[in-house]
Length: 91
Image (cartoon, rainbow, N blue to C red):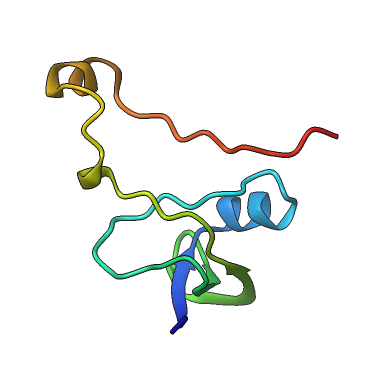
């Protein structure tokens, strides 16, 4: 059963998602999120951390969790880190 999950988001990321330039979210996996859930993003003020009133909803697609990934060694991760790549349709 899908659920609605509300999370806070900073203005610069809110704007990028709203413009269609950012099509992913990187979050600490300290809460359950599954494909089909709805993620409600509530913008917060950068300084006060209070809600600005702007919100948006996005349906969750693929959820990858890094603890499940063992493609690289700890040495490689320490040297290079991770990068998240957004995949868009060709226009």
